[in-house]
Length: 246
View 1 (tube, rainbow, N blue to C red):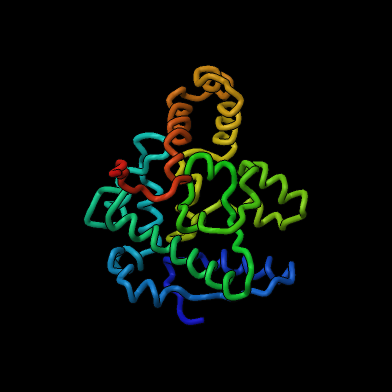
View 2: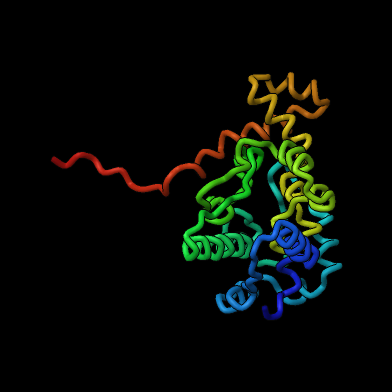
């Protein structure tokens, strides 16, 4: 299996995945992607002095402030990267490469065994765009897409999924899994987010949602903007339009 870089995945997450696979009697294989990441220079992006100092890294991320919901600021500077832009450059390369290579590996084994690759994106993530269409979104079927995150937890409880897995904070597990959680990145709890999304879906006005949930109307607006801007993930790659030359 080889040596894992300690800042890639939480050991606890690997243990839980093994435990649950064995409980369901599912064959599994642990593939260490560290050598590939190293070969393409991914670890040159994150300075060793930051990556090795786990406590310092956790402290830095805990102190991140956001300008608004869904907008992480100072992300690159917190990591010690050369750019302050989160939408492109080293920060995006560091995170997206991990997500997308994982998707490549999963789909490789699915094709090899003539299986379907199964995605885990739920309705909450799909609606606000909290997934990568060429990474965790690159799958053949997505069984959880009709369900909000809070509903997925209810389903898991009904199916008697171990409690420690149900209550674990969802995380992309690409750096420090216990600090950079999904709720940390999004900027609010899934309980609150799902409530906003549900009320938006049912036609309630932003001001009414804010009053009902006792939150700032700007938070509702941020969620609504995320929903409206999400459409690009569901389209084919952009291409030029060519007029009829006949």
